[in-house]
Image 1 (cartoon, rainbow, N blue to C red):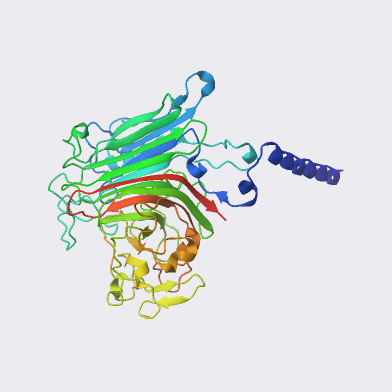
Image 2 (image 1 turned 45 degrees about the vertical axis):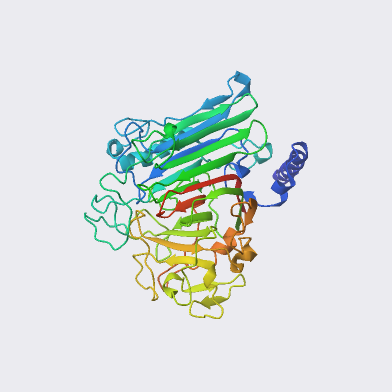
Length: 497
């Protein structure tokens, strides 16, 4: 009897799945192609989940900006047409040190760094989506997700303040370094102002909202942006159809010449790229090797010749022995790879500057080409490579990464448009995807990332590369004068194959 009941159960379920697919008109792509790793595939969900974080040079807070609260914020809402109140918002953005919230630890109450990280978890709990809104996904196990993340960072570094570790180790001030970090004096590592327009529904059916502000704490952006820094991320979508478009602006100033602004898809739990603590985000499933990234990008202003505009930046963390990161900032290493599409950014890697090149390049057919093979190594495909400062078995010559701008050692592999990346769908020539050439990209990021060189100790098992952060945006790297960047991003998705 049990055998017949089992057969009947399977038949009923298979029939129901088929009827369900036909009745709900499941898109062909969802039945036959890859599965999305993000909570809001293609940025199409009416009920937006967007958050904000701001950092100093070493991904810390140190001091909150006056009257701004902790530099974490969120705009999360649900659409409720039946109650004649379209938006039900969920955010507590003005919370700052000394103000309690549910789940806050005692040690974080007056510690700006700990407070910010725990505030992010709290905002994530308010914004979290745990059930699928798609009727054809009812059989799948729910994987909670929280929000897209706007990341803002200043590269100002006060070597006399003692705020940043060196390769994860506490470093007493003053720090003696040959690196030319920008800083106008005491207070140069301040947090920015934050203004928030909660998403609202306009008469024409458009939903709009924004975050903006400045690092110049005594400035009034309402009086114009001359001689001051500025950032803004605005979002808009038609209610009921289309997708969210995120419009970004970033402006440097003489006092703040090194600024970064990205829109990130981070891990929904565990560590994200560059952070040795729990974060929240949009990636409910971490991509490894078989995945593609899709998005639409239009760049209107590039940010000048020092703007390292990242078509895509991917980040993760593993130890030099290949083991996963566990929060030990002395042995954990943040790993980044970035495709820079600003045509003004040159290749620092060359036959005469092997110090700026990775030890080898791997082709799509898995051929390894050593960097001293001047006839075959694609020098123009690499802007810059630098190794983690705690690596013990480095191949000379080598450039070590900046030991201060991350709370733990870091490794960078910075790429440029080149035919070497063409098979992965990345740009092959300078100018592709730049100003005047808006595109929808479908990048085989998993295929490329699995073949990039990253340092690992000899005779250790290869690291299982899980990418915990993916983002698009720019790093205006110590501009000589005031520069502006402006771009729009939409349709972002991470597709597991």
